[in-house]
Length: 130
Image (cartoon, rainbow, N blue to C red; front, top):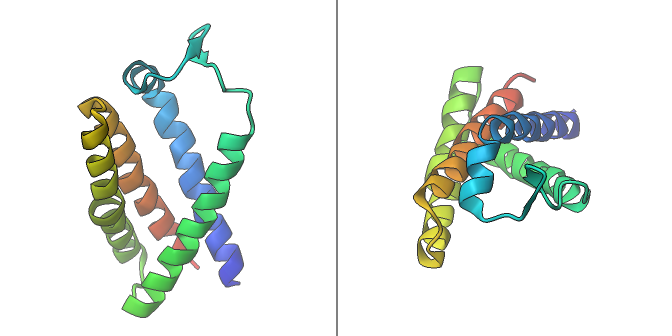
């Protein structure tokens, strides 16, 4: 049952990312410097970023489940709070540091950190539903 829970949380956070970047896609393409062809990322037809994104979402959800079990996190509210906290205080500082030293635009940092925070909250919610 734990594996199903982890996979469900991974798929939910990945799906949230699809919505997040659909809404913010134009701005993200502008500030990320990604090559654009006909208004879409040039590598859009390459399946590897999607496959790898889903795979690492499973790793993320598995580790979140482990942390939640050790911390006694139960309930949707606490799942959302702890998930968002992991995104805000664990994932985002790494992005902020790497993007800062690379001279990446602040808007890119905000978009990607926003996904880390809210995507982790979504995973946390799903992990506490089962």
